[in-house]
Length: 452
Ligand SMILES: [Fe+2]
Image (cartoon, rainbow, N blue to C red; front, side, top):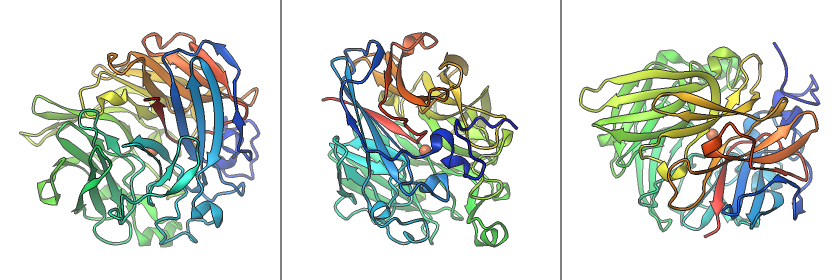
């Protein structure tokens, strides 16, 4: 197998500590960054991305590194940069997954960063959120005034029509294995519902539509027998089956309708929406996941995700499952103004297939979702992408009218840069490339937070 994961590959290091996965040590604040091209004047705000950056230089698993925020501030065509750790007990006490066990506040806070109702929240799916401000100061643990008693997914969904935020949490430590939550547009947690599923599973993402939420009960299963035989508390067990659970947004467990699908795993959804009595979901689907246990989140062809469409017929109960493209990709996003609504476009990051660890490719993909047709943006040879985030050109611009933004890494120069691509001319050179004052390790998820 080719090994292109790193530019300073050391075989004695775990893959998630090699090359541009390796953590950076400095917390910087830099003004007036070097720009090639021109930053669109309409882009005023903060691009904030979260990712794993183990402060000690080591973490046992990619999932467990300390959360570090990388912020790119854009104002009138100028750019500045700041990076800071999210300061939680996990960081301050140098905890790991074992020593932090049972403390919901001890979050690595490393997976996503979102803004809702005036709060900026750093998320990781096994703990409570942590609130930060836009200067990247950590403000404290955030539990919705004591109403949230469990973890919060790193992938909530915010409805662009109502301003509500929807999320779930899953638990390995006894029933209910799943909980559902609804937050109103003012940030008040107004609904909490236990949801019955047959066994504890790792549930990383989900979807919403205008009227429903859709849970994905997929077979990465927590199983102590597996822990004994493989040393891993999770494993892929297709014999457990796979189901999609459709529930009205204001519903409860008794209202969930479950639909069987072929066993698979989906780390991330593009979007879902209602159309002609059906629910249409676009997802990054992989045939298998963590087959060799928790540490093996990636291991070749069968664990690479591709664009699939699931169409749930709410009348007949049938689910149509279609692969839409051969391109290997993950970290899908859409224009967030279309979350839960019919969306025509999706953006994602190419993933290399001929490697034995998670390796980002040198293309970003734009999909015309209904046909599955794809436009590639070539980042250049030996340049590896990050999650593409869409920023509209104005509040009321049409879907896809705006820019696709991503932190990418030049392996040859070991420099990182933000690329800003005109979404309507996706194949073209970026309109701006902003060079960062330090390498930005490959990370997880981020958000564009325009100035109000
Ligand atoms: Fe994720």
